[in-house]
Length: 562
Image (cartoon, rainbow, N blue to C red; front, side, top):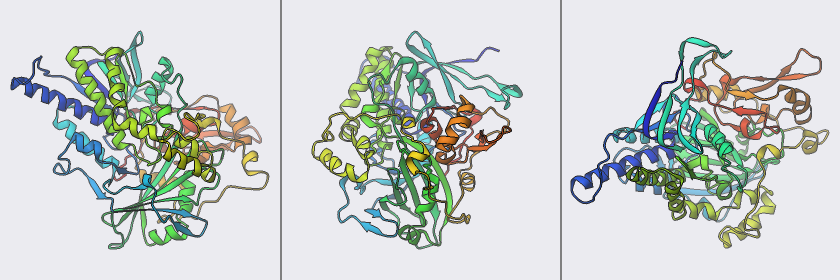
């Protein structure tokens, strides 16, 4: 069977805030250009019938979108100034900020909220709802959005990217064609914009082929888990943002976020650095433990968890950003490590990078030129924008905090004074997979990790019960999208020495070690239908033994309120 070929003018991979902002801005620029031509305000040719296409792997826009999320509205205000009149789904404007240090039993409030945690003027939002709304705005501009289509292969002519191939649909778990089999599409485009989000599976392969991270720090990540808790009526004051450090983490760096929403809801989340040495790192477990702290429990007592999710976020920042452009392509947003990890914000950076990519695309369409020489304009625009200003200021933050909370505090203070430099102009980093140590090295002979609070199905959950709250769906008779390279390593080295970190760090019970037929041995079982697409396994496996690929048919979580 030969793949159906579709030709478009601009192809955007990913229907998140970066990709949708790119599509909307480009449509806006084309619309303005054509109007000015009609009015005789500019010279040139009219741009009619251009195909701007967005591919989204989820079954619908927003279904795979998860974030804190507190959004700086600076990019939204620029892109859609009348966003409020257009009923943008903003849960609440931030009205109060506070920071606490949690010991095992007490909460100590910082007398002054540090500047990075000032959020007044920002908005607490649901990123899944926001992306759905943004997609509606794109549809109104004529952008074509195709959900349920995962781009799995980039197409090349030399070093130029000329399009993508989407994944086949309708194969069974053994890879055989089912009656509803559909071969993936071949989509040719003048330019491809990669906006897949964290650890983009296609852009990861493009990076390797074109060596786009040469001379860059390795990518490093954080893992976040989050719950939404419904409280009794009249008990929650909306617009509060609280961050905490300390409990429940002891062997890993991270912190928590608490946001209060209208309709008496509380967002409770935990973010952990994945360069932890701890082989038994388990963010879901620590989130459950967090709720036992007197300060937190008092806040959520009487409530009921109604939603859950987990994802990773890029934390390497400025020095981990790949090359941003090349012949026929650009990359923006989380796929390019554009997150301010000090402030835990990236939506406005993703949107702005998408908008700058759109400006570059517009110039390329005008000149019918998408060579690397033309597309380098994107990086020049980004370097003049607040994207560089914000990311460059925190260029060494993650690497410094990875040294430990107490050792890093004076260094972070020095970075604030020196505009981000500190003692070392450019601090290096190591891939998260290489930092994990053996259980005996971290815990000794007698110590064990903290235990999970007893699940009650109301405030405290085991992982499988939490997965149910994500609405995750995969076809059970479809190929396993989590590709294991060498199962013997899991059985003979990883389980005996590291106690199988994937069975801990995965927030969805995808991985479990089961007794093998051979005596005194365990084999790895992959429950791929549980996968909520956080991609931690692709990042943190100490042997880099798992390759996360896109499942067919839009499978995955079905986030609605996250």
